[in-house]
Amino acid sequence: MNNLNDNRIPRDVIAITKIKMAIRENNKSSKKWENSHENCPKNRREKTRSIQRGIRDVKDLALAEYQGGLVYRFNTPSHDIENLVKHLPESVFIYAKEDDKDTGIKLKFSAWKNLDKDLKPYFYQLALSELESSSNNNYRLTPFVFNESKALTAAFKQQKLLRVDFIRDRLQKALSEALKRPKDNKVAFWFAFETAGRGQPHYQGAFLIRQDEEDAVQKAIYKLNGKMTAREKHGCYRNRFNKRVKVSQERSALFTDLNWADYNLKEIGLTKMEYNGLNKIVAATQPLIKHTEDYYNRFLQQYKVSKY
Image (cartoon, rainbow, N blue to C red; front, side, top):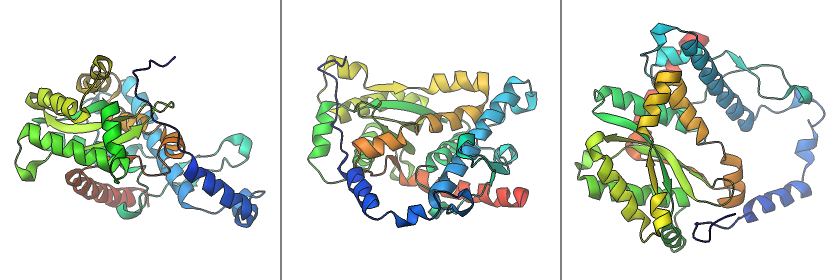
């Protein structure tokens, strides 16, 4: 049973209801191939699912190798492109066998500009790992969980930005004020909006911050959340850096960083359809987007050389 002090946002199914009604009124295109998997269109959704399946296969293989005692994998950072490409399968299976569509689909990655926004967190995470290494670990990839207060929800409702854009901009401003970094060194971060399946607004992602900035980051998030009850303050912010280190030691860095991104995308469909009006649920800062695009292009080049 939910505590009356818990923040909850109402379900919003207007957008998805309109789409369902439109499909019912004009479903001719879907009937063309509903009885033949050979004629099923190779659409964007299928490609997105195949890439996500490929990344999940990477996680499984990395975990199996690590726990199987392959010592040379132990200190390999998650962003190592050669290691990532080596773990990617040439084809993937995205349909359940009972659907009679279990033929493998050749794995192909889109150009960055065409890559589904819901897939980009996997590469945001790997790009943060690369930035972490390039700083000699002075800046650390720090996973986090941030629970939105009732006060912040009220502030969101009083403006016109999309939810994740509003939170990203407010969070970037709060961190800039708290950390006093130079303008060309703003905090790189990404997050996904989640609701725990019951309308509880919270954000899970990762920062690139120094260890001596951790307390200031927490205070900045408290300030961003505004007036909070004791219960809201207790659950406001969780720094998951130590958990990341522990899991990396047990399961490999590649598994850990990809798994954190994957875990934070587990509610995409539900959140979009029932709590976010089909709007995007992922946001990232411009410095991270820029570096991730560069990282992705280098990955894509090596992937094509190795697999094609």
